[in-house]
Length: 146
Image 1 (spheres, helix red, strand yellow):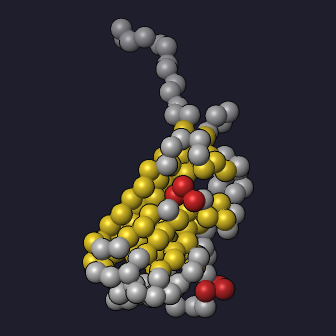
Image 2 (image 1 turned 120 degrees about the vertical axis):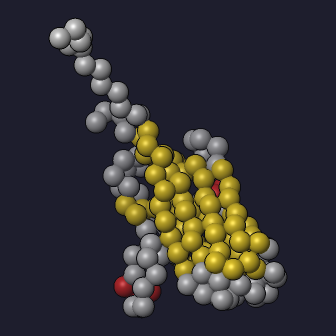
């Protein structure tokens, strides 16, 4: 047949994974409000607000997008690990429709089993109340040993 019988197996030691969160009609005067993985009509206490990580890893970026541009006030989105915001992950938006931040590798790490989420804070002057928000927390899952 002429082909070598050697089979080469290649696997990535880390996988970049987007974790998506959202909020409909972003209201003013929110403080550390957990974003949901799917916007639902049920009470927030019944909603899912994070992803359980099957492997250890690290948060490497956060990106945001509004359905309409804001013109006043401030909105900040940050990633959370087990409910605590990682300060290095904050994305502040004052105008426009999108924002992003990249986090140096090794800065925001988490163990397998950690709950990764996102939270939002808006000040009283926030005017984007008709805008819907999508936020993506980008993680690298360390898959060594599988």
